[in-house]
Image (cartoon, rainbow, N blue to C red; front, side, top):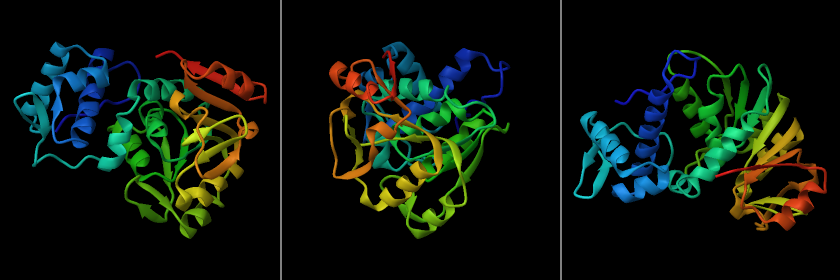
Length: 276
């Protein structure tokens, strides 16, 4: 089994941390397809073919994957990954942009803050950057809670409070009356929220089953941070989460449409555009 990195200071050389994170990424990508080729892995991780081949060999030696003619596939004996396959497939889309968004958003809270994190592929990537922080995290995502725990390793960092409720199997999110009752017990300094679309009027999503709990998270958080890759800007889905003017920050990629960025900024929303 590949050992995941511990976020606990400078005792672990940075190149070893990056290597372990790459191995974790490759396992997640392998879980979402029958075969992960060298070319696909290079595109998804922005690594060289030589680096990917070495990573494939290490994963195969550890028994996590089986080598194929053109790449790897998840070993039948490997431990099941935390993310549902449908979730992992979405995670691979615009992965570099999503990770850059998560890295930037994670710098906003201060140690000691209470942070709510809504389930989603972009918000999921916060786990890597906050696991070792002195934060209290409230989340409706089983996937995010487990990822934070794995990234911490043997040393403790963020404290995680996981909502109860009915599991949504395609996303790893819990929802329903039990989730809403849980959220009503707490208030947070920050909410990190994903979406299906955002324009100058509203933030929207597809999942009607989780809408009530997401609105509660918005209501009970002092500051609202929307994390959205550039493809979400200008799009609209059927369920309104909140007016765009309610946002405090919107973190997106540098290829987001400039006109819409200016419109949203004019509402008083701080726009954080990350370079990819």
